[in-house]
Length: 230
Image (cartoon, rainbow, N blue to C red; front, side, top):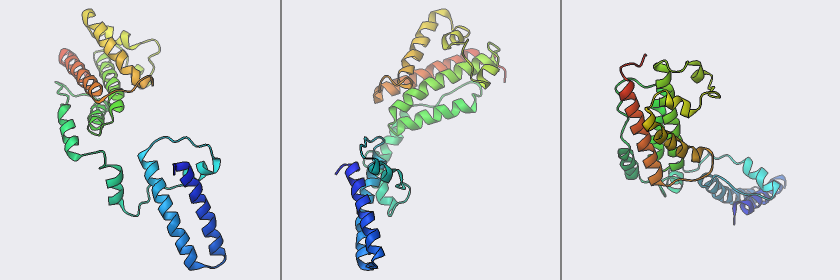
């Protein structure tokens, strides 16, 4: 059965159990509830393992919307079913080791630190599209930080998230030598693809994007460390 069929089956069992209870048939009601739990467990597993479903039946949608996903009879069993069938702790450690920490000569903003931390975590957990998107965020956050701390743009642009008259290229031109501007802007343009929803990326693409981004960021902080104002 697909999830829509299971939802309708659950609805049928719920109505059946309700009728039995009204008639006072407790033993039969207990059996009916047990049948509901079997179907409910299957539905929970499907909802936790997959993020989108196509439903034609409004009743099936109503049933699924009302299912509580955070209640488990056996959390250990749920972990085995949902997490460890695709994830190995050894892989986590190995992937974290592939993305080295940013080594900057000066303090970086807490936001940038968190973006980098989450990108490494996402790579370790095989969330490669998230890694790619965060790579763009990391690059832009670093560019914005250095532009502000070197006095090249007013801080209000960051505070108000207003870049209508200050494109990424405009900011790059304030920091990067002309011979390197095109390469950096091209890298940024590539990183926009996932954010704009136009593509999916592979593990290798996400790792390459993150490593190149961290290299750009590290180099920029090295170059401007002596004139950055805290």
